[in-house]
Image (cartoon, rainbow, N blue to C red):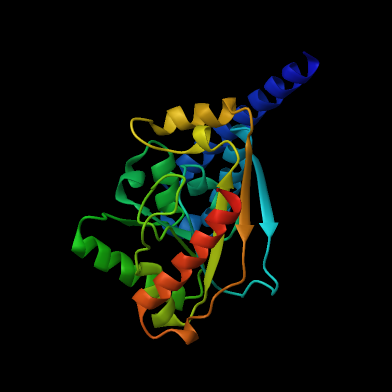
Length: 249
């Protein structure tokens, strides 16, 4: 009983913190960009940590890499849930690529936009081309990127193939791919599929009996061994299928 009361009190306080910080960041998002500069991006990462905490998720980062992380990387991961849209920036200093619809989410979309996230309309070739150009520009300017190569939220199982965008950027810029495998122990509660909304999923996270989210970081993969983006994508996709057998099967 006391444990339940303590958890509810902690969650209430976390949501109060998140609400205040959200209002601050949302207000700041309307200021001229020169007034917010790059530090808005760093504040948005703190906001992501507040959100993960308010959702009551036990986020665990497991370092499976044998070598230090490179100074710059293109982070990729599987995309079974909505949580990783916030948990990955909470853990890593990255500029994510997201679907255009996220840009129009209340508060979240505005904050993501001013934090310099990149948006793409997946079924529009011109939008995909413009997003690729922006990703290359970001990488050439020394920024870390975060891309979901499955091309969207495909559920708990690894999708049949990876899109080549992340690997194209890697080949063009020489920036290595950093693979992160995501495993939610309560897969039924964390998996995002129709007709669930983002609010539905937030409630599912908060009421999950097992709230642990495991993020496994592996060694970065240099593009030097590959000359073709499809070959590169298929090679990494095969690695994810092996991790799927290890953690999900």
